Length: 268
Image 1 (cartoon, rainbow, N blue to C red):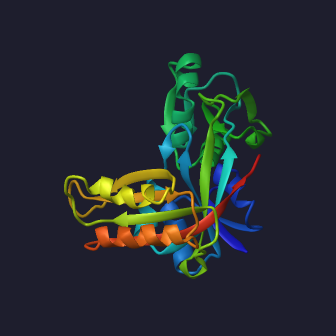
Image 2 (cartoon, rainbow, N blue to C red):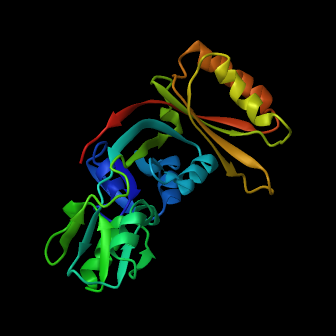
C-alpha cells in the first residue's frame, strides 16, 4: 500500500504513516496529500487534524472541505519534543509552527533571546540544524545523530501533548462501520439560531459530538463551513436520521460524509 504524508522523512506525520503503509512518499503540503488521494494516485494519505495543545490544523480542515475523500482511520500519538543542536549555543530555533507553539513557554524561559523560524515540518527544521550550527531544531529525539545532539527532552509545555492524524482513502472506500464519524457541512446561509439547529439533530438522538469547528467558506465574509465529529457510526439508524435532518437544514448548501472509522493509539 502506497501512502503520502508530510515530509521529509522523520516528521511526526511520517511516524503515524508507518502504522498504515510500508511504502511512504513525502510532500510539504497537506493539500497535496488530499489531492493525491482524491485522484487515486495514492492508496492512503495521512494528515494531522488536531493537537491537544494548539488545536485544529486549519490547512487539513480546509483541504478536506474542498475535495472528495474518505476518512478510514484515526491515529492518536503522543508528541515528544526535544531540542536538537550541534552545540549548546545557537541563534535560531527552527521547526513547524505548531511545534514552536507547543514549546513556547520552554523557549521563552530557557532561551528568551533566541529567534524562532517557522519551517514546513519538524524534519525540515532538523535538516536546517544539521546544515547550520547556529540553528537548533525542535523534533523527536530519535532525529538526533551524527553532529546533532539532544540538548533537552520533553520540552513541550504540557506532558499530555498528543496529535490526532486521520488516514485518508479514495471516496469509494468510505465505510459506515466504526465508532466515530466525520462530516463537513456547508449551510450556505446564516440566521439567528442556525448553529443550534445544526446541533439539535444529534442532541435529540443522544449522539455525542466530539468536535465542532467552523472555518471560513471563502465565498463571502461571515460565511462558514462546519466540521463535525460524533461518536457513532453511519450504520446506526440514529446517525442516518440525524444526517437526514441536517441535510434539510443545509438544503441551500451541502453535507459531506467523510465516513466512519475507529481510533488506533500508537506510541513512538
